[in-house]
Image 1 (tube, rainbow, N blue to C red):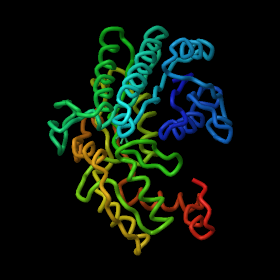
Image 2 (image 1 turned 60 degrees about the horizontal axis):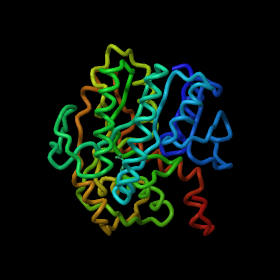
Image 3 (image 1 turned 120 degrees about the vertical axis):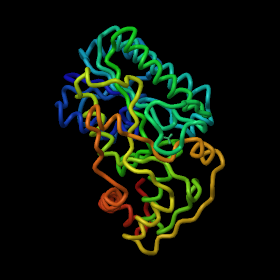
Amino acid sequence: MKKILITGALGQIGSELTLELRNKYGKENVVATDIRKPEDSIVVNNGIFEILDVTDANRMKELVETYKVDTLIHLAALLSAVAEEKPQLAWNLNMGGLLNALEIAREFDLKFFTPSSIGAFGPETPKDQTPQLTIQRPTTMYGVTKVSGELLGDYYHHKFGVDTRSVRFPGLISYETLPGGGTTDYAVDIYYEALRHKSYTSFIGKGTYMDMMYMPDAVELIIQLMEAPSEQLTQRNAYNVSAMSVSPEDFEKAIQKHIPEFILEYDVDPVRQGIADSWPNAIDTSVAQREWNFSPSYNLEKMTDDMLTQLNKKGISENIKSGTNQQ
Ligand code: AKB
């Protein structure tokens, strides 16, 4: 990876990955792109930033040529809950953007990363220790686009020799950028609300287990996978990755160790609960461990400790006292 272009750089993953890549590979070697350009964003202001709508193949190609890019990290996509509200838009954006990106990776011989998700599994998939290779019959449009994306990754690798790499991300938890429109978003909201109000009403029901990961591990693993020798990688569609399998009451207990008064209540959203019920409880990550040494460092306790510390530093709890809200 010498010159990297990132799409969706202002999203939940992109905003942290971009900064880490700039640190590691040099500001002049990372081109961040997104469909919007907010003036107060650190991603926009501390390095190269270009506007890019990923459905515009000509503009994507122009940027790849202008900056002499050798690696494309394609993150722009709609998440599960919003994709379920707008399935046609989700198909057009998730698949249209991906196909443009893969075509450009083929034409310019780029190394390529795009994330898949635990959303690529469905109700017929084994729920526990979900294998790397298993039934993938998702019942959401998000899942349909993720399975199609995985198949395209395989296809472009085998047919055209593109160096495609991907992982099936679980719910990602971070204190920097909020996720937008996902089923696992409750796992981020719960920390903000614990600090603001010492209570949270979960839209995901008690006893619902889903895989999760703290963002520093997610950023690290993308770099690790992209740096892994090509010949070691057997799964060009996407690797299972996860750091923990967690239910709302597990978060409750972990937060109560820091904020004993914290109360968790439930007001289940049937749409997002339906999506969560169709996903695995806990996936098996042994193939990623074996092939490129995937090894996350944050468990629930360590993540909770860091999340609350970092959010406190951002002044989230002080906002309760002052009555202002900077989020
Ligand atoms: C979502 O909830 O849609 C995402 C995901 C698991 O892919 N966080």
